[in-house]
Length: 606
Image 1: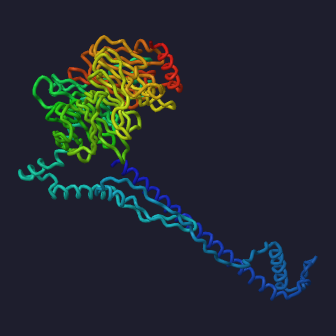
Image 2 (image 1 turned 45 degrees about the vertical axis):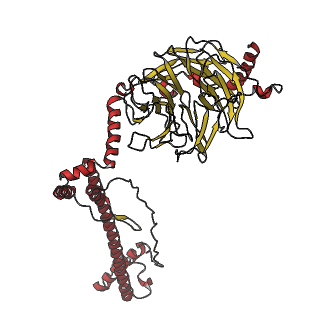
Image 3 (image 1 turned 30 degrees about the vertical axis):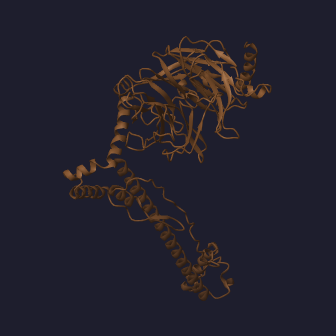
């Protein structure tokens, strides 16, 4: 308010100065007109004197051109006086300067230049104080040919303060501090708007209390932030950024699956089994930017959740596969913690555990693909989970159902996919075509396959035919679906061997995944609590990073940019690790190097 008073005072001083300048200029103009009038009157008087003298002495003044050489006593005194006067008048008339005469007088009316003005506004609440200040600042500017005049002064600041005090008194009289009755309080507290507001406000306050940094700032560090005081993670190293675990909710549970949101890069979804007790299944969503144990969202199901994912084209949808065979859907916009949709437990859908859920397609045409452990594939619409749109039975060469344990689709492919089974075999299948079902068989593992991952790196070289599998036989194997096409003599019943086997684990390998940003990097986790990161272009025998995390590790998931990886363990903890730049930032020729390396590995493989 003090700054506003000072500004108003400066404007008043400026108005006073403009008024003084206008009055001074007006006074000077009047003085000039008075001087001109005096000069004209004097000129007229001199003309009258000249005419009088000419009438007295006549029109020819030659008789008095020369004064007398001697005084003459005979001339009368009056005659001498007249001659003297006449001679002096002629001398004065000779020294008189020439007069300037006004030839023509014309008036010109020049229109003032019109100035276009505009007003800048801000969308905020408009109060009485704002209206008073605005009214005090508004002045009318009148443009003339010689000076810019301003309207009358604004109201003094004291009147503004008095008006503000009166408005505050009126607001208090209107009942701003009026207390609500018991019925009104119950109506407000029972409304859905109040519950939604309270949950969001409590979430923000919890973040502000538990995290020392600015909650309105994006804490997702990039390379520039690391160089200017952020956590440094250089070279081929990894660094633990945070561990998420709610002791009350996750105690005794196993983190079965993890998944990053494709719409909000800071949201991480994890699913948990029922644990030792007979409790329900659980799915939690954390915001990784805040260091707090409690999740942002919590969802329940009647059966343990063994697989989960974010809906690719629906930012608020979460999809889970359960041990009972139900496919469930949660909505983060809803205040309910139970599924908003679920599939039926009938022969039309799944009746065995659903370990594979994936959303494929485009924004305008997409489907949810699920496969249960009895080899039944179902295609769903997210708008209706009461009945699948399509079903297909995956069967082996002996016409037996495949016990599917994992599934993966290649990048931008909605038809071809690969699955791993509990019979130690991997299969490639198609959803549509002349013969939908299994088309290729991959044999090489000595134990059940726990995870499978297709290559999804977007490089100039097509690497979508590559995929990795992990198994209970302590190995990770690299395969190529092109081998069948490259060998025309091979029959459809012939199994395809692995391109290479990575054998540097001393326990079960529970999960494996390609790095989304680097074509030659992949990661895996094992039962010894180790995170292994491999770079095939650098070394195919030993991982470039082996990090001991702690408990038995069951799942892992890279972020879309490959900078971080989330790991779930057997104690219900979610470990968040940040990768070094060399692991997620590839060189321009990494894909070409990978194809060259694969040829060398294939030649060396017995």
